[in-house]
Each structure stands twice: as structure tokens, then as C-alpha cells.
Image (cartoon, rainbow, N blue to C red; front, top):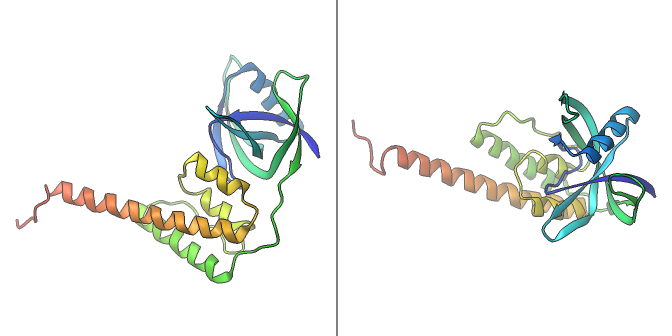
Length: 203
């Protein structure tokens, strides 16, 4: 077990995911400055109107993008190991906690599922015209590498974060990719129809 400085936010950071954050509160300026100076991570937890989740992700500051004169900063963080809050601790301006790692079961995804998930992701990338990089088939925890590259609701990401079976996670990600591709294709067809007012252009 280890003690982490915590940063509750209304978002979820998945392992391998990179995300920009704007830091403006004094307590979190202090936390981030310490993490940068000592090259260590802080714990990012999903928080909403119902409270703060006990499962989170360690976040490493990859880069300080901008520092403002008043101490505010824009940073880029990357998701690392998952953890569970065991005991909240005090004594700092920001919340701290003793945490334990959240480990996966020995339940890897099948090769066919991996191939299908990558095929779906490639199809979605093509339909959207995105230039996002396709993860490698042998990426550790491929489910997270894929999920981190698409827009998902925080609640969906939190469920993936807490899941401890790579097989189950990848199956869920496959379902999400199928649904996303269907939605994108539907919007594309609707836009095409709208551009012709729903009529066939005979000119």
C-alpha cells in the first residue's frame, strides 16, 4: 500500500490515456508542483454529484504545457496504474489516502476478439477521418489503449476502469466500437440527406 495525493474531478482517466488538465486551485497547484519536482504521480478519482469514487488511476505529469504568472498551469497527464482508496488521510492542503493496486485477473482476451476489436477501431477511424494512431495488437491491456482513443461517457469509462478481466473489458469495448460506428454512419447519412434537402440531385 502507498499514500497518494488525490485529485477528484468529474472525469475518468484510463491507463495509457493522455489528457490535458487546467490547474487553478492553490491546493492542486501545490500537489502538481510536488509531483513535477519529485517525478511522482497523483491519484485521479471520478467525482460527481453522488460523491467520489473509491477506484482511480495514478496520473503522471507528462508535460507542463503552460505556466501562468498567478501559478495556474495547463498540464498533460498520462494514466498509469489503477488503485483503490483504502483509507483517507489528512495533514495536507489536498486530500491524501492510503491506496492499494487494483490488479487484473488472469483472464486474457482471445486472439479473435483482439483482431475483431482492432478491425472495428480501424473502421471507425476511417469513417471519422481521424488521424489517431491504432494501438498494436500486443499492447498491454489493449482494451484501455482502444477505449482511451474514443470519446466515452465518464460512467462508461469508470466501469471499464474497475473491471479486472481483460477478456470482459475488450468485449465491452467491442460493443462500444460497434455502437459508435453505427452512430457515426447514421449521422453521416443524415448530413448527406440534409445537403440535398432529402431529394435526389438530377442536375
